[in-house]
Length: 292
Ligand code: PDD
Image (tube, rainbow, N blue to C red; front, top):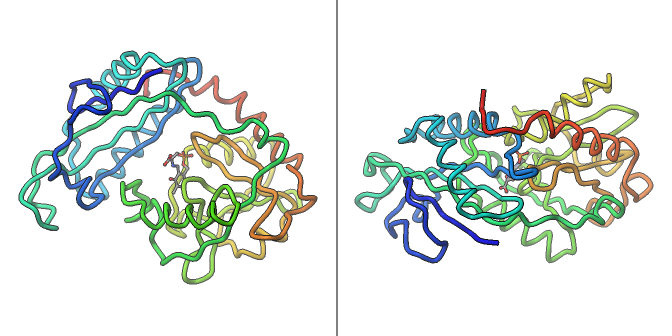
């Protein structure tokens, strides 16, 4: 079990110095990132994750100093160097370093960091027990999704919200914007199941388009379950029959409590568990080092 860090193509241990203290990712969160996980040592949905990385970089005006196939090679080398049975892969691209100052033009050489670490599994019992979430008000447009759906390294609002949720005994914070709409989890997307329909905040709300979210929506539509992606109010979540969160690392996790109120029966619901099962079946079709 090891952690390996690849900075601009050079692989090192995690505690060896590798990124400048002047790096803008460190100073300002001026970076974009992706989190990918392996199944049987092979990444899932690599193509969609890399598409989103390039989209995020474009939105922030960061020109990635690497081509797609070279990045895939580098990810693979880093995963192999780390040598874990299953790997958490974090790819971070920062605007680089330069004279200290906010002006993005002060840095000209973006860097690419790949971190490969042992995959930390979430408790399997969550499938039986579900988890609680806490609604946390945040300013509009914050979250992991500024600007316009980019997965930027600026996660302060999300991590503060998660801290609040954990202190309240919940496993995830659900961010609520200033107009009172549900956005997403601190690092997940949120769904409700109501009267046989899947309801989830739309991308126009300023959320991150989760790769897991997209797959779950495809699965639901594939079994003729109606999917409404639109603005969602907190009461809808509280009054839902079932709810769940989705993310790369957690797949599909039943949500059984919002703040102090039970959702539905207070137990993981049948639609959620069916979608989780179908998601796991679907994973096999999205594994590979080819990104299409
Ligand atoms: N985050 N929304 C936010 C704000 C997130 O940070 C994430 C994931 C998601 C779910 O996206 P996906 O299904 O593509 O993982 C939604 C990653 C996993 C993380 O920061 O660890």
